[in-house]
Every structure is written in C-alpha cells, then in structure tokens.
Image (cartoon, rainbow, N blue to C red; front, top):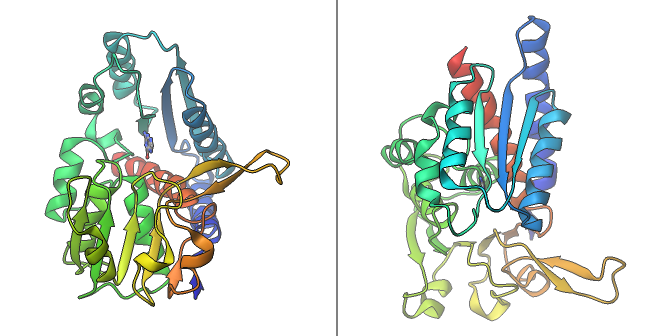
Length: 291
Ligand code: GUN
C-alpha cells in the first residue's frame, strides 16, 4: 500500500512557491496578496482561515483577514467584497463558507471579481473549468488532481467513483476526473443521497473519492482490492486516550481500508493540506495574470 502524503506534497508545493515569491520580491515588486473574509464564529471556519493566513505569511505572501460579526447583512458583505474587488493591491479574495443562514451564498460568490476568485467558485471560473480552459480551479479538487499527478496514479480508462456532489468538492472533482487530461480520462460515476445500489457501484471503483461528510463511513468490505482511495472528510471523534480528548478521522475507516487499498490518503495529512497549497498556487496565478 502506498501512502499518499498530502502533508509532504503540500510542503513541496510551498517550497516551490517560496522560490517564485522571493524572485518577485527581489525584483522590487510587491508580494502577492490574499484577502480572506470570515463571517461569524464557526470554530472550524476560524481554524481554516487562521491556517490559510499562516500559510500565506510563511511563504512571503501578504494576507489580510476581515472578521465580520454573525449579524452582518448580505449588503454589508457585498459592499466589502466590492471594496476588495477594486483594491489593486489585492490579488485574491476568499469568503469562508458556510455563511450564516440569512446570507445567500451564491449572491456572494457571484459578486467576487472572477480574476480574484482564488477559490474557483465563481460561475465563470466553473464554466471555464468545465470547458477545459485555463482558469483557477476549486482548491480541494485541484489539490486531489495534484496528488494523483505527483504520485503517478494512472487514471486513464479507470472507473472513478465520487461519493458526494457538493459544489466545493464532489461536482468539480467529477468533472476534472472525466476531462481529456492527465490525470483525467477516467470513467466517472457521481453518487449522491438519491443514488441506488451504491454498494455495487463502489465495488467497481478503481479510484474512490469520498466526500460525504460521514465519519469512517467506508469500510474494507465496501471497496475493491487494490482500489486507490482519496478521503476528503475530516471529523473529530471523542477519544479519552488522547490529551486533546478527540482524534481526527476521515470518511474512510483508514486502518482496515488501507490493508486492501493500493494507495490511500490519510486523515489528517492527506487532502487537507493540499487545499491550502492549491489556494496559494491560485493566488500566485491571479497575481501573475494581473502583472
Ligand atoms: N469551506 C470549506 N471548504 C472551503 C473552501 O475551499 N473555500 C472556502 N471559501 N470555504 C470553504
């Protein structure tokens, strides 16, 4: 079994970016700049935004974080995005999701300038991705493609099953895996809550990408021998044997599935670190396109 090490790969990408950013700063240009907006107090979102800020600063990028209260109106948020869209010193902007219920997420995503949409969520960027045009791709799917590429996982002609159809992961990764590209060229089945006979479909998967948000849902008896497993889930399970009182698990029961998989991403240290690495890559891309 090959362990697909996202932590190490993300570090490699960060080291590549450090060299490029140092060269930019050496030539007396300003550093690429990412702005992040967080609305409300969701603890997971706060952790993710902090990690994104830390990652930016660690490679020499500029980071601005706008923390807005839970009660912020949609209009106030739209005004802030408009302000950042016009700021020529900001290259990329992300709005951490989920947003409070009273704010329409799609209105917010639509208001981000596509050239600054480093999350790759804007309909224009999604459309370009579907057509196979050069664009900023959503961070988590892009990170998965980067792992498959760097670990030389063969995808052409393989049966790829994606569990989960979210706009952030399931839907875009199903498109990327089926595109005429390398990695890509897979035969993709996208399963969701209304799918039937999931057990039979799973058994046909050469590559299984799991993003359904259910802790340790996939067990060894559900997957084919020598399957490649990409686990996008991350959950805290209570564990009194740990000092923290919890352990992190994915959507896949790692211990038993890793016994029969040919390659697998761990949790933590698999897809998670790659999401941030992709965001940094997209921010540099946005910077370069502008300058
Ligand atoms: N919430 C969960 N994943 C993401 C992501 O990749 N970007 C943003 N903005 N919010 C998220």
